[in-house]
Amino acid sequence: MARGSVRIAVAAAAALAMIIPLSACGGNSQPTTDANGKPIVNIMVRRNVTDHPMKDTQYSKYLEAQCDCTIQWQEVSDNAWGQQKSAKMAASEFPDIGLSLFSSVDAAKYKDYFEDLKPHLNEMPNVKAFFKAQPDALKYVEDGKKIPLLPSDRGKGYEVSGTHMFINKTWLDKLGLDMPTTWDELETVLKAFKTQDPNGNGKADEIPMNIRSLGFQLWSPLTLMNSEGVVTSFMGGSASEQGFYVENGKIKSYYTSDALKDVISYLHELMAGGLIPKDVLTRDASQYNAQTISDGKTALTGVTFGWSNFSEFGDALGEQYVTLPPLKKDASTPDEDVKWDYSQNAARWAYAGAGLSVNPNAANQDAIYKVIDAMYSEEGSVQGYFGSIPDIVSNDGNHQYTINKDKAYAEYPDTRSIALQDRFGGWIRDDVTMVNDTNADQVTASDQAVRPAREHVDPINDVVPIYVRPNTEDTNILQNNNTAIANYANNQLAKWVQSGGVDKEWDSYVSKVSEPSLGLDENIQIWQKWYDQYTK
Image 1 (tube, helix red, strand yellow):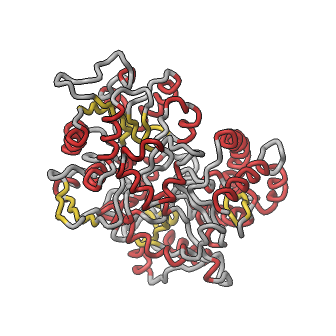
Image 2 (cartoon, helix red, strand yellow):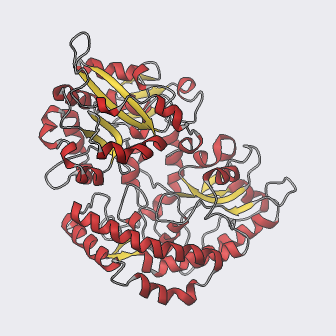
Image 3 (tube, one colour):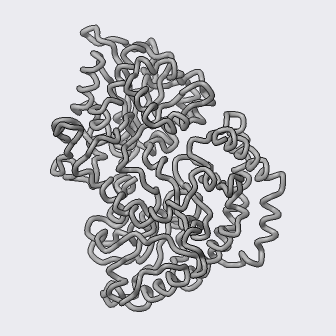
């Protein structure tokens, strides 16, 4: 979740060089025991950073000691896995244990290659204890009576909204401006940012509001719909990411909501006034980063959306930014109607569409479940997410662990290079205290300003809970319909932000997007059916 995932890119060629051919995974053509007769377990993991091989870590040795086995690690970068995944699955090449490789959709499509883990819970007492402590996590992955994937829990330090809105407080103070509380007040502030040289370099280079793109996704300006009480939950493969929310227990679509129309109209007004760059919908991530991190000395961006102020702007400039409390659409909006993105469960569960899988055809099944149980132990979970004990993390006793900042953060702003982080399999228990977890400390600090508004959210009647999951047949229908809906609607939204016309054209757009051929009403009915089944 940190900016490290953007900044720390690894060339696909380098990652490919590290990959052991998947034909060895769970097949009979390769040895299943090592020279000492110990069982071999193959683990494949998708990682953002692969320059500190897992095979060289104390964590790997810890797992091997617990299972009395030999682990062969295979690591693949995000880009490389995106290119290889379909071909590997079609060829039935699945690892013994997969970490962050496959989604619930994959498991449904290739069910013969995903072991049902439910009958094995007694072999994995730590996983069983996890589900007892976090029953919603079990709902999240349970497919009927089966568990094809395991989620992970990175702890209460990450129970936060996935998206926050940041404003340059240093600029506000320099210009003598109050923190905005409404859309109009924000626009007034943005105009001052544009014209009054708040960064003090004598250049008209300030970007009042910066956005990545439009979409029902992390760090989207469409979270401004919460200003009118329409709740988002843009993370973790939720119904919200497909464009659906709840109003008093009834499923509705953002695509036809007045709140979306209002946000699109507002964003166009800002863009037309030169307060949002006109190229935001077509540029690449590097251009956005150059305007947020800039040179690390002179801030260029006034307002944007992200994870934490430091991950968004870097260590040097992050101090200038604070979280903007959720805005009212206008001064007449009642306080209790202002809400905020309700994605804290998805943010906590490091599952974002991919979990831990087991190949039912793999050799050494007993050793596999010992490995997984060790991953979900207290020490195993801490090592998997944060780094090995004792070389990166110390066990202080009484469920407290301290990250060695000099070792963990020497090259990167988090522990991605020396640990699995959100690609791990594990469970950071609520009674565990992590000292020097700067990522959690920063995002928790960023989250404080949105918590009063998030408390206005009814977790059942305002949003589809993250654990509500349609079956395979309905998921396929949803996907096909969503493609048709998005192909039409997203182009319209982008056009309106850039060129205007949403108020004039809205009614005809609603009629078009609601045509039976696109399937919006069918999707609403499907989500309503599964929402009712899970919640009532």
